[in-house]
Amino acid sequence: MFGIRLFLVKQALHKIKSRANYHNLRVSRILFNQKTRKFNQPLAGFTYQTVEVCGMKSEWIAYNKNNHTNKVILYFHGGGYVTGSIETHRSFCSQLSKHSGAKLLLIEYRLAPENVYPAPIEDAANAYKWLLAQGYEAKNIAFAGDSAGGGVTAGTLAYLRDNEIELPACAVMFSPWLDLTFSGKSYQENQEIDPMLIYDGFVLWSKAYLGNAERNAPYASPLLHSLKKFPPTLIQVGSCEMLLDDSTQFAAKAKTEGVEVTLEIYDKHFHVFNAFWRVLPQARKANKIAGAFMAKHLNISAAKSGE
Image (cartoon, rainbow, N blue to C red):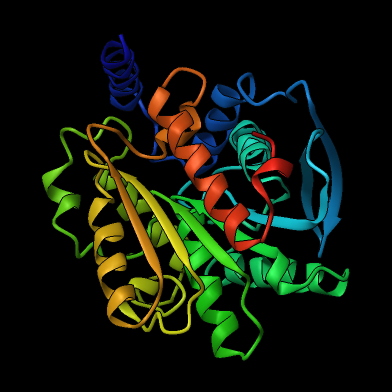
């Protein structure tokens, strides 16, 4: 049955992909919000609070059974740097709060084409510094992000390190986009089997995001630059997605540079499958692992997490 569920979800995504209007960035943004909004309404058992962080609309998310109010996940949503919002990621982020025992701050960083690189990195760094100014300690903060938000995660870690700002306790990246030069073979090899991502879309989104910056800019393509001093990092990725090599290459490089990194490749799964936790058992399993990873590095006991 579980295999049938995965097959049906992938078939549905292939159909959506075949009809996707990715050429018009603003239309893509509107459609993404519309298609995902109904799956991202507030969930029972959670508390949601709107807050403005450095001019950004943001939302605190907390599982009501958690009591570690000083432990925070700072989350950066995906969407190719041109789409994504609180309304597209609230449900998935709620699961991370539940399984980690920490509360989560989901920010809406500036999007392209209205805002270009390094706007999301600046916004992410400012949100982190805002948390520090509010009294949260670096050792009690985890970074997490999916797809382009995974790129923001790694890019911001590099930016903070380069500016000698204390790094968070750990980071989790879900199907991260880490190389805007598309050097990995999986961009080409997995085009047909990837049920979500479109190669031409990557080209369009990266141009919109980079503006006049080079594709190998340090905080846009962190895979191509030093990863030294990064905190313990967990990466979860599907075996059939175009971004697979971004994850495998990052993990290999991070290890050679002394970073404690864990790579999990989920067979036959797709881009950010974690968001499909309602129907995919492997998504629920992966989310629990991600939550446990953050709980460990934030020093949250299992008995006090949302398990």
